[in-house]
Image 1: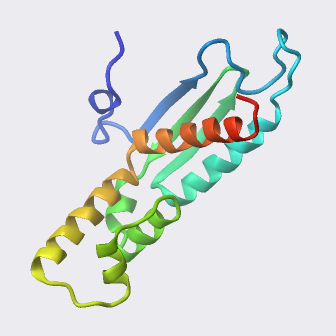
Image 2: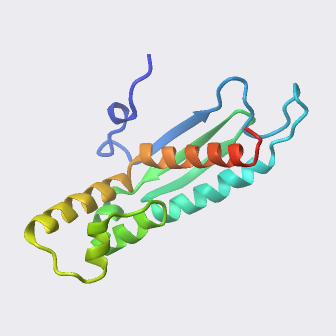
Image 3: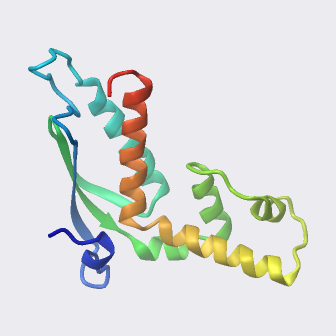
Length: 157
């Protein structure tokens, strides 16, 4: 029986993890589908480029990877301390490379003086973003969702 990543990952034990993502319903990630004759090798580049981008944003480094016809493997190193050392502004900047922010963060960035309640909420938001920026599940979600969307947009899902 499978278990959730949060119960499998203990960064205090090791920062290195082997991750696997697999396609479903005989779908092809890369290579040539012998049933349809379609070639999906161009998706390798999508995956590699996205991994590079995500590694420049997240505190997760790629130690090794292998891309197969219907799945891929990643060996990653989670650098939690790096994320904890980022300033609040750096966390916001990294988060904004992938996601939209919110009005409170926009007010903070524009230099507006925030009341105490707003400061508390801002701190909680930044803390949540910081923890997500070294979270393997958020990394994999972002990688897999991007590949799925690209495949669908390009009409090759």
